[in-house]
Length: 171
Image (cartoon, rainbow, N blue to C red; front, side):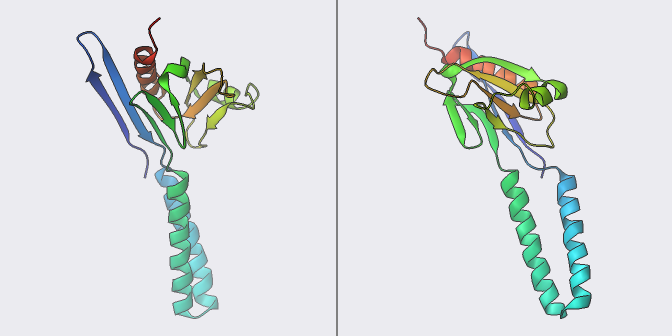
């Protein structure tokens, strides 16, 4: 339940250092508790209406369905490593990452709402209020930016900034 975050400092040369970052956007514990309470309510209604064995089978199926839904919804991972940014199923080379901005709850709500661009890639979760806005500089990519909800926007922003500057080709 919850999330895990991994931030490591790597030495890639005498002066260069790059951070890697990884976070799983798991659903909060209260969602699990509320879901189990909902299933328990169904069990209580079923146990008085149908045979006991059928009520237990249906309740077991409901619990498995609940677990599958919550695990699936909470499965996206945001990772910065190996010269790439991965967010859910999407990924991009860090050489195409421009300005990275950590956003607070108010800025996230505005960027995801009234100031949103319909072409942007959004990885939003209602239980995460803060995010990181990542400008995309690849001319072939139609998305002008990615908006990624995270529990640790400052850490993600720092990892992206340190990795993207080292990933840019020198001219």
